[in-house]
Image (cartoon, rainbow, N blue to C red; front, side, top):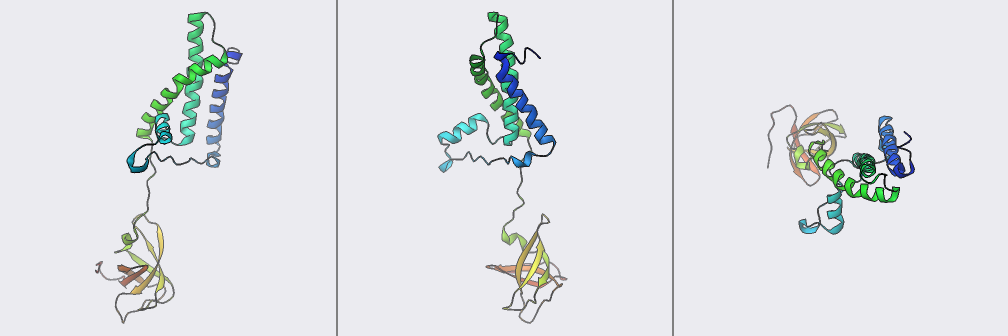
Length: 208
């Protein structure tokens, strides 16, 4: 412990202490106070600009920011202590803290980038459940508010393929038909923001 807290090792001890603090923050559920920014590494016309290239080189965007930061702290702290032991073995004493920190950064940055890139290959990616509005066609819904007749749409609720609830405006497809609250409808076509529906008790069929 005394060697860890020696002046020449202080930057690495602080780094490992911050790593422990991050672990505690995540463990007690406070990580949501530190949202991960989105990193877009696609430049215009598919080319990377200087900032995007640097972010890609450092491994930003491969894993969540908190994971990247924890990995960087671990690489800097552990590699720094290892380098100090190596320097002490070769030169008889460890390097001063500033010189050792610079050397540790030169090793930690590429090591962290390589590690986060490898980790990013297996890290779960966020998958969107967004669907195009026409993805609701062929789905059954329920009239929630109002009475739907031709020229007089009512609000209906429809679940998409992911189970998410959508509110849409619905009119009957057939002129003489109307739907009241609680009626089940089948969305068969769309014009603008209005969906046209048949009786939801019938078979599924779409109309052009």
